[in-house]
Length: 274
Ligand code: PXP
Image (spheres, rainbow, N blue to C red):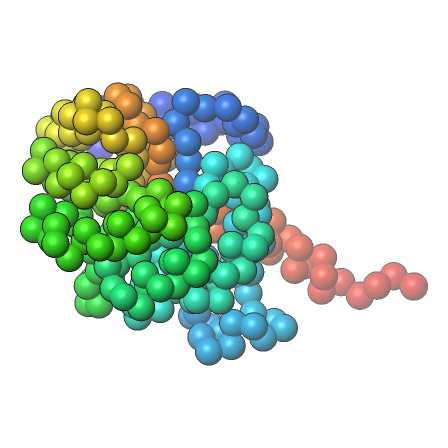
């Protein structure tokens, strides 16, 4: 492993040890936890039966645990193909979330009507392609101004704050601003997937984009592929108000929670002493 990557891994370990079991109650940057992959796990067994008495994991419980740990918001993506989060999840979350709900959605009439009924505090408009494994690349706000404008207007008219999930370029930021979005979410995928050297170039791109968006008066968020290692670099990008993180947190929860889950089952398997 290259020395820089090793140093970063050591720093991450030290940070996680320090933070272990602490609830961070105040932080400059806010955290929205994307719980799509909690639903991915449920769908793997209970697709078509999400209200069954034994369906698990429970999405609202997962959201409540994130909030209890200090998350500032819950993010879900209601995809046109409903591959993870379902309509009923969004309605349940709307009832139960005590922080804020950020609904990610593609610009389609069907999902727009749902958003207007659910009234999340925030909507993040994202590109959507049925064949992609996850959201690949940012929304082409600059190329779709005419198609996006009525959607942004209707959401804002309903009192919903609007964000655009875009690549960190001036063109996309200017288009988001022209559309009247209050926020941009800078796509951090290219940064997250780059190797050490090129990663610093991607970080610089994010820094420049963030400064530019902030100067235009936009709230700057970021997300995609942020994990417990690269957060050390991302957290120094100026003006970042909120990070939306999903896969890495859910993956880590699986590893950190597995031992306890096995222990609990072994205890449950014991016959009761009478
Ligand atoms: N932000 C947006 C707009 C997303 O679409 C996603 C999921 O791709 C995320 C944040 C979270 O990304 P990840 O699961 O990689 O943390």
